Amino acid sequence: MLRIISEPWSARTELRRIRERFDDPDIRQKESLVREIVDEVRLRKDDSLIEYTEKFYHQVLDPHQIKVSGSELDAAYQQVSQELLGAIERACQKLEAFHRQRLPKPWVQFNDDGTVFARRYQPIASLGIHVPDGNRAYLSLLLQQAIPARVAGVKRVILVSSPGAELRIHPAILVAAQEAGISEIYRVGGPQAIAALTYGTETIEPVDTIAGIGDFYVTLAKKLVADRVRVDSLYNASDLVIIADKRANPRRLAMDLLAQAEQYSLASAILFTTDKTLAAEVQERVHQQLQVHPQRLLTEKAIAHYGLIVVVDSIARAVELSNSFAPSHLELIVEEPWDLLPSIRQTGTIFLGASTPKAIGDYLGCNATSVENFLQSSIVIEYPADPFQKMSDTLETLARSEGFISAVESIQSRVEGDGE
Image (cartoon, rainbow, N blue to C red; front, top):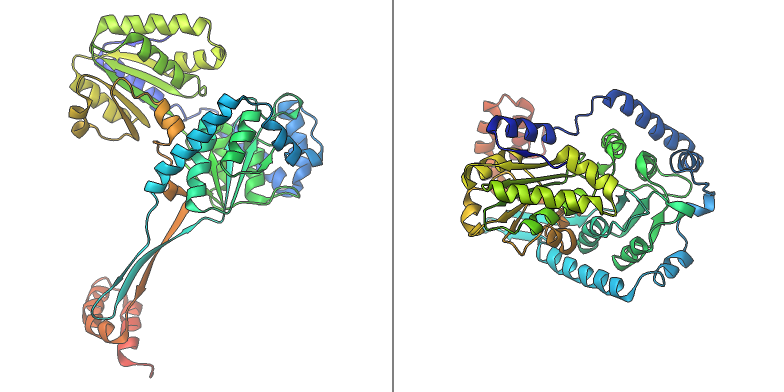
């Protein structure tokens, strides 16, 4: 049941509990299991992937079935509606346009004294995207990662996802992946997939960056391999906070909370409002919708554990609580949302007004994932001999003040020339 809280101390306690939901009390036991899985994949490669698929997903996987075939990719287009295909194509176009605007530009500065400063950007070499469940069409998660990677110029992007019944991966995922430029897809998920992306197997070549979400075991696997490959956020927290005044529509608020909760069981969905009547109406609507929700088990779990309505005495107090919680997504459903912006701190994406739900960010790219996540930047500096000579005294003084004697000698060796 979605709870309503009005006492400030109780609200802060609950918000802290939700914020710390990734601090699993059984973490040592789970870390041990994940370490075992990672080591097994590193040593036994495809054989371990096959065994873990049977153990965890109760599916018999032959070596040649690990990779999704070209014929399956082609067939996926016949299994989705033209309406869905068109929506995927439009979303890809919008996402690409959005991220191209954010693509950083290299620059070079030639100074009159002959010195040169520049910044260059290079795409990462390869990216592996983990989608948690091949039975579900996690289109937003896939496109949010794949499109900015394509805009960044990443040459090799692959997808891994746990197989469903009959080793099936949802055809919408296969279509969306291809529309985003991915044709290398594997039927592996969980920590074993993270290990395969890191160390490689006979079938899967390793990547140098891993992105995507999963359960707590996937998070632990990413943590274990983070010293070998680049990973995105270890804790893929998805938090939605809504700040709403008495004019807000209770049905929309309820649907926004449910839309957040249905994504996965650790998603948090929180409403701050000044209106007790509105809070009660939203609570009742959420309860009613949960009874008929097609993803009731997962959604109800998220609502029960990480859903919350907090009745506050002012919008200013709601902003204060939101800032302390630091959500990844914030909806401002108030009369003048722009007026609140200067006081908003510690949040990822902000959605302004009643007609701007979080779904805009999920499907059209206005979220925390950036094209810069898939770029490596370098500063380039050239100092010719003459300007270096002029700066040498300054450099020596600074280095000597820090006690860096070798740095001083490094500077002096260039001032004095190549002689001993």
